[in-house]
Amino acid sequence: VADPGSRPVAAVWFAAPAPPVHHKLIILDGAHSGPALNVAVMSSVAPEYAPDSQTLVVAACPGVAPADDEGRAVLAAEVRTQLTRWWGSGVADWRMLRVDAIHHGQPDHRPPFDPKRRVALGEGMFVCGDHRDTPSIQGALFSGRRCGNAVVESLAG
Image (cartoon, rainbow, N blue to C red; front, side, top):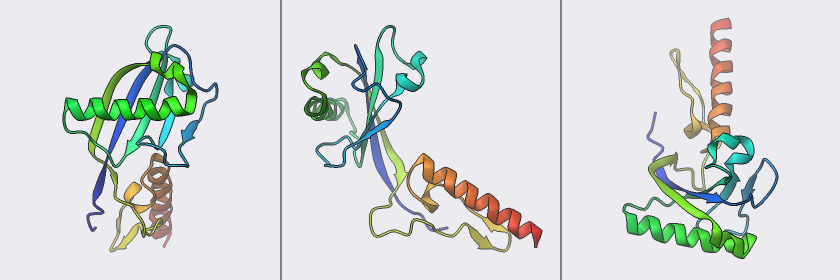
């Protein structure tokens, strides 16, 4: 299997006094207005993840992985500025908890790419993962389902 390459991803975590939205969803930045591509209120799904009496918010920043504390501080400030444009001055009250930088966070699927790469390689070999579909949990799960179906089909003969 050819190396698909990878791209970095950073996650900027905040403790907020209140959630910016009151729904269990991922907020996408369709305008590409800053480093954060999507934001999730993790404590809306799992309240125990948040610090006491607070809300846990995470902003995902694909293509970015600061190598040092200074770079992480710059990224956190840029994300805070972006989220202030979205939700207003209350974002200033959010406490930045940490920045996680994952240097090989996702397969590199920048265009052009084939979103449904084959999973049956022949001679009884199969492969699955987000590098076979889209670089996401959804892509990994979908690829796993396609691979499992291919294995069953192969065994059924």
